Image (cartoon, rainbow, N blue to C red; front, side, top):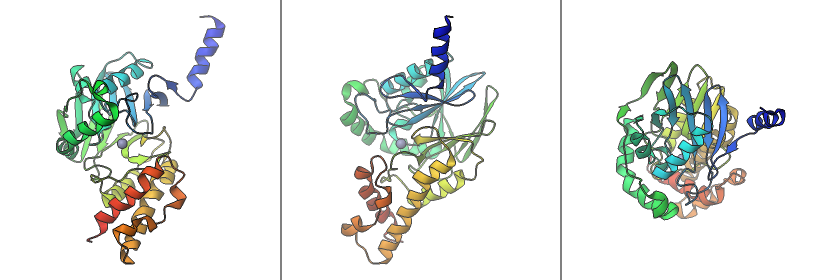
Length: 306
Ligand SMILES: [Zn+2]
């Protein structure tokens, strides 16, 4: 290899992420572990529903993919991103929850021979919401981008914990309880001390509490996840980081939102005045303008009758 090309190749390896397509960046996390970081913004014809972070784990038996992408074509885009770091096939796909980008790309991977694994609660949630999610994705991504996308569910499920050995790599799945969605699960690699948190942790942007979320369960799941001796954390949204950053962008916000809405209700506050709940110190986070009010509204509805 020409010395200049060799230098350039080495430099490229040091850059924070290789942009592959539609904002997908492949970032090394640990030996044989990568994050594929998608856009933080809304689903679009360009990102094909991949507005989240995904993970890839290299094993002697092939690759394990953490979350398949938000559509059939989105999954194919993830496959192209993976090929920039490995030529091995994806043999296992894990669905870390019930939100669209955690499972609606399953069809592509099943077609390519992968085993698909999810918590039983995630599959129940996916079944309940598949039509709503497909309608929403058709609006944001468009019919062309959604072509080929069918609801395909995991062939293997687990209740709370599942310990796998795939090609010599220990992979643990833990469903702590309902959080962002009813079936959220984390993927823990005890050897590398890498945690894929799924949508329990968002960084760099405000998290979204939806009608499918459970604020108390989310806080409890987050508390459990924090007990793991995490060296590298790959959030559900955001770039690879650590637990301190998760605390900064998810832990603090979840607790403040819960405590303040609870106090607002105790003080006799009503839903029409919910905007009085102070979230000012979190408003510099991405997507805060669209989500802060909706989040407080959702938490109010969950705590109102307690
Ligand atoms: Zn998400």
